[in-house]
Image (tube, rainbow over the protein chains, first blue to last red):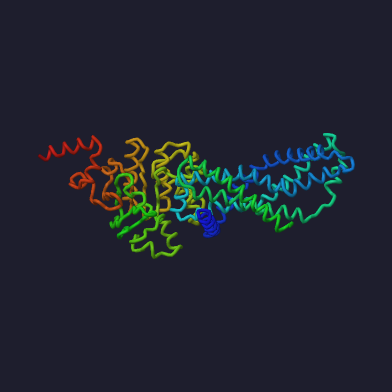
Length: 245
Length: 255
């Protein structure tokens, strides 16, 4: 029953986010601040993880393809498919649930416990619009971050494969190009946009409606990470079934 | 002027406010006092419109809050200033940014007009330095003064303060109390202060309401509170040794 109540209050929160918007001049600066914080602030970790995961996927695939009949370009093919279909959109989003999600929950939760949200509401500011809307807009750039993740992951795979002596650059490139289905990239970006929405709103919900003090801010951040991850995993399944099934 | 008519507020099965009626006059510092759990904060939040009472009405200069539309409520809120217990300054903004925030949000003033207004109110609260500092870089007393400046920057008709001098040393607390009273008289504001500090009562208690278990137990002035026979009030007022000694001296003097 409490889950249903939470889903209901989440829906009401989303409705409130789009009501009574604050002045565009102020909103613009808030959006730019959030883009800097949520997107540019995450690029480093996204690039770092993507590069090494791409490299590891290539090495693992190469080490497991021991049969000489299997062409080596399949290593590049596997790396591409793993990164575009699952690793970059889903796995990176789970990591972002930890990084971006915790930041969103703790920053809004701290504003709640220090009465800063009450101060906004007393002034007549729509606190949900002021705090959550800029985050949603900033997260619209998330597909660009995921595109970078895909590119860097494949680059990592190429470097590990070629310089590790597992296959030639031509074989890897052939694998990248073989059986390429553009719709799979579309599918990946649709997923990414849905995950961006989840990453912006689920942690905001947990921060905005939290009760208590500093300890509860920490608990809310953990709960937000768990629920954001759970919702991402469930939506990943639903979207895969709907778009590829 | 704010008129409160028989308001009731519950949370689940717990009835916090059990029918409070009173009025708060313009240009006066009105104090709500009472022990922890007496319903002071809930009462103040009802006055601010953050909680909606289940019964009764709150009328702000002839405007019944429960009859106002969403836009009218928002307009009314822009006539309110609030000083929170912990100041509630925005961490990400400087002192100047905090004070300018309501002007940025709700006015179409030019940059220079806003700057003039910010300079004026910061000067009014005797804060002519620390413009560029963040709330975490200034003292508790300075934070309170910034909060007062932010609360009055829009020329509010109503000023609400929740424990404005909690966590401050007695000297700074008195300065803050006096500042609030001066501003109230100077700008003819209806000020309501939630406190349990007897020093504030003695300094600025032009009208005092004593709450106990969600009901208005007593109402009067700072002069009357020391003469009342109401047991609940006297046990609250004379709970400290200092005030009990003052009371004994008063009784001896009278005899």
